[in-house]
Length: 459
Image (cartoon, rainbow, N blue to C red; front, side, top):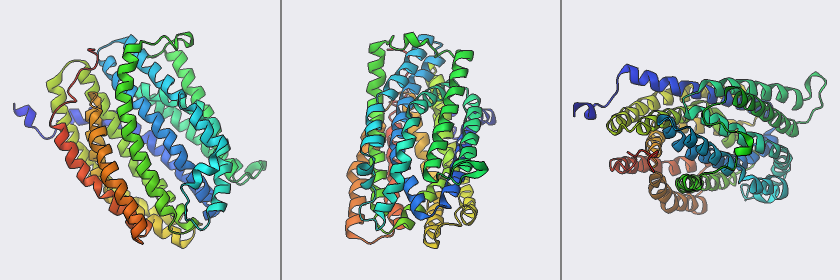
């Protein structure tokens, strides 16, 4: 009984958790640093070009959330099948990731190639420089479309390797891909080393090249190492449909929750983008490029929690999983406090990286980074809580609590603040995010019901 009440685990437990989390965070940090370098390079083209790339990035963000959600859902089952040493189950979970990932290709094509301007204009309603920003955004979007298929394959393989505890291979490949991206950005944005100056188009081409390099490396690993989830191409549609439907049922609940969150974020973005010109768009989007340096903690905490609890539940050790969940929540809160101080330190980068943006944009970036750093303990805890629930297949928590609070509280609040007040973009964002404090309390009450303590390998 005493073990159940222990708030923190021992050093060995946290050492294991960090061994899973740190490589993922390093991978995310490298990607964020390269993204920051990208922003630095594009910012030299001015507020309008910077805004165009970031508006396109907001739309691509929706596709990435869908893809990550599908891989997250398949990963819940893949991790538990890995704990139960069931190879066929792991292969079925990997098939689910690929099939559902490619299912998004048609809407992705329509948004990127057929109706890019119409879709992105929704994010710039009321912006005084919307036309100029959209010109740049469309150029970028129609090129990055070609990274869709490579990215789907890469994310599916990378997430599956992490589900099995192999966090180093995706890290190494990410290093190569991000360096490739940076190198071609240097060549193509400004036309260095005799290459043509392509500006925004150059940034898009560099991204596509990096994704192609990345997928080639992952396919080589897939063929040579033959991980336990691997199967031959001709077996792609050898699907266990009852299991597929079980995964999809869980996936639809997670997808609904995540898409509601994306909707709220997109709506918030559209409202604050309308409160000025290109300086607001570039300033707000650039603040996230800085914040991504400490947002890396989310992926690390989420993945480590999922792998640890998923494996324990797959082994059928329910009591151990209960203890580990307490240790993980406590550790996440302490880690979140540490990340607040790290986040505040990143403000020192702002005048260096974004010196070529307007003074108004730089002021917005600084205030937003400070605000987001202050929220880190809450956000890290929320990620840990959600990861605990989903590790045992409790996807209802996200649907019934997170999505409900977002739909009935957060979105109305965004609309009221947007329509009836003149709050600046930073204040608007901060007021809306106060709702996350309520979410963390509701999540805690839900987790006490222990609906997540399930072994999913038993049908």
